[in-house]
Length: 166
Image 1 (cartoon, rainbow, N blue to C red):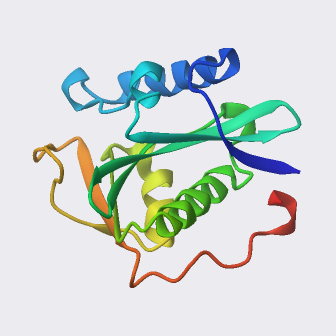
Image 2: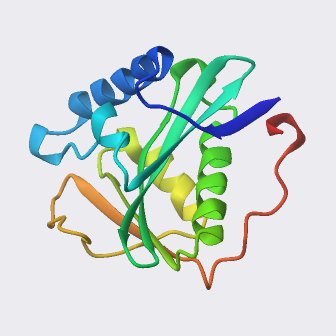
């Protein structure tokens, strides 16, 4: 069974996962276009951080950053290499969207890369109702970034979660 729970980004296994995430971002984007947060930033008061685990093994992570009243930004979505292709990112994304809705958010935003490496992430976000949008919250136009948004009032809650992901 896969569990998604609030977690501490400074836990040893989570630090390893986030290290891989930051390494992937640095390998695929110029330094000025890497917007991934480090563990200290992910521990901040305006951020809620979750991990997906099976037994004790960390499979992926994601976070929700409070922007302004009723708006949030999805940050640090990452699936461990050993867990890719199992639907972990979709499960995490659905959880974060549901938690945002329960917390009274009306709109979510995110930034992801424009490079081919990020194509699976962009497809995931589009499948879940996210639409491309202009830069938000201090981001600027960048050929290495794609900005997306989701209107939670117009987006239906996540549907059935496949049995193998529960």
